[in-house]
Every structure is written in C-alpha cells, then in structure tokens.
Picture: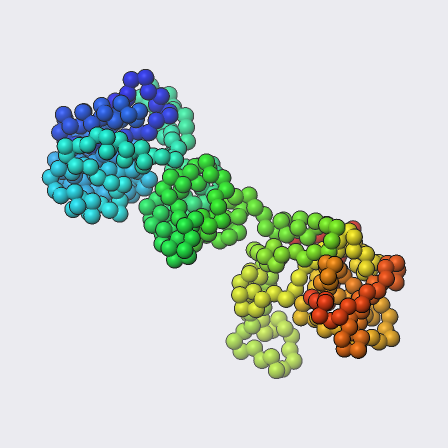
Length: 410
C-alpha cells in the first residue's frame, strides 16, 4: 500500500490503480497522490477484487485488459462488492466507445491511453465533489484497531432506512440516480433528481432533512411509507396534529385537512362473503376481521367532509357552549340554515361560518329567504349581525366540542 508524503490518511479519498503495466501503474499512482489522494495498486483482476474487499477504496482506475480477465467483465462483481465505488475505465486496446457502452451502467467515465492526466484529475474531482469520507474499521497486524465508521454504514436514521431498503431491493447508487432522473422528467420537477453525492450525504447524515421533492423520490423508488420517512427525519405526524389542534389563536381557524388525515388510521369491518345484511343478526357473526386503513387512502375515494376547528381567543359568540379555545368537529355536509323558529339555544344548530370579518362559531337563522342573521349565545353579551346570504358562507354544523381544559388525545 502506498500513501502520499505527509498525507492525512483519515481525510483523503483512496484510489485503487489497477493496471498490469508496472510503469503505467506506478506513474499514474504517483500523479494521483500528487493530487491529494491516497493510493493502492493492483496488477491483476483477482488482486483488484481482493484489494476492493480489503481496503474499501473510494475510487478505482481500472484497465480494460488485465492478465486474468477483462476489467469490463468484472464490473458486475465490483458493483456487488462496493456499490458506491467510483470506477473510471482505462482503455488502450479497444475503442473508447465500446468500453464506455459496455460499462455505462456501472462506471463514472473512461480515459484513453496515453492518459490525459489533467482530464483524469478533473474527472476525479467532479466524481468526489460533495462526498464525505467514510473510514473503514479494520484490524492492523499489530492488533490495534483503527477507529471509524464502516463504509456504507451510518448512524443517521434516514440513512439507515435508505440503506436497508436499497439492500432489500438490490439497488445501488446509480440505480437511485437513474430512477430519480426519470421521476424528475415525468413530473417536470428537477428537484426530484438525486445525485450520487447528494445520496451519499443523505445516507451519511450530512444532509439531515432533504427537500420534500427528494424525499418523495426516495419514498417512491425504495417503496417506503410516508410514516417511515417522517419518523426517520424526526417528524411525528400524530403528535403534530395534536399540537396543531391545541394551538390557539386570536381568531377562529380550521386545522388543515392534511394535518388531520396524514398517517392517521381507522379500523374498518370486513364482512364475510356469506354475510346477509338484510337479516337481523349479531354483527360479530357477519364479521371476517377488522382492517386498519389510512384515512388518506379513504379520502382518495371520498374527500373528508369533517373539519377540525379551533375557536379563537377573541371569538366568544358561542360561549359558554363553545368558549374561546374550544376545539370543534364540524360536518361540512350539514350547512343548511333554516328559517327562524321558536326554539331554545340548546336545540339550535351551532355553525362554523365565514363572514366579512373572518371565521366565527355562532348560531344562525334564515330570514325572508334573503338574509342570514348570526345570533350569538345570550350569555356571551355579543349582539346579533344581519347579512345578505351572499355575504356569508355557512361552512358546516358543529357536531362535537372539546373544551379547553380537556386533554387532547392522539
């Protein structure tokens, strides 16, 4: 093994130079060290595979023609042993086009003999731009252990999730990049593309919370659930919904529907095939099992019509029935206001209404078919307001109230 003079072994990428020509190999290795990399060398295909297993290099300059086989023929095996290895093909015996096409799914690029060192130097710099060094823990002959995190291992929760999924699906870095580029084209969204360096930084934890578009790409490509991804980046949707529902404002407001439905699950009965619903019988006798289904999935068939509303600190129109700080369950299908009747406030419907002055929780009456009168609860001390029916929107009827001093459950 050869290292550059005065190099910091723990802070520089390691390059394996594989060529059977001793002069070419040593000259190229010397140039690579001068560029700031560490180097190891191999003269045969078998030695190349052994060094990849033992030394875990970050890059490989691979000659096409080696004494015991073609470098192109070994690409599948090299990728299996080290999926994130940057491979650059060195060719002098076949055309560059043939070499590149043979390895296009596996290699970063190619150079021809005689080697243009400046071109190769630029290629390596681009290949490792944005990557981070991962130190391989291995035992030295003296018995001392070199400390560090093994390559392709990570303590980052999202990185662990991604690596596990990649292993299960048999995917490598290039597969992820190619699939993300396809998604970016299909969705006309360049942010969905995930480059190799970005993927490496996500796995290592250097990027702790990627953008939404890249997270969507990872979720789709790796068959990950939103719940798993959110948990990996530290989000707790159920907890977030409870906190959002418990957050009070000066004005009455509705909690966004995605916060209500996202990752929330309900149980639904699955009936037996021979169940007869037209006959009176015990329900359990017709039941095959209960299924746990995400509300998001159900909403794709029928949009949710229930809304969660927090009564603002300045909205006392419904007090003491629904005082400020209360959380309301509103049925948006029940939005019809009836004509005035001699009914008590305990019998009247309480509505969630949008007025020219904002949202409010209030009683309402229809007058002469043209006007809507908003009527506060008598105990509130507020006065009624009259609007033309086109000036207000009856969003829905309040069907449930959770008072401020009651505990919110997830």
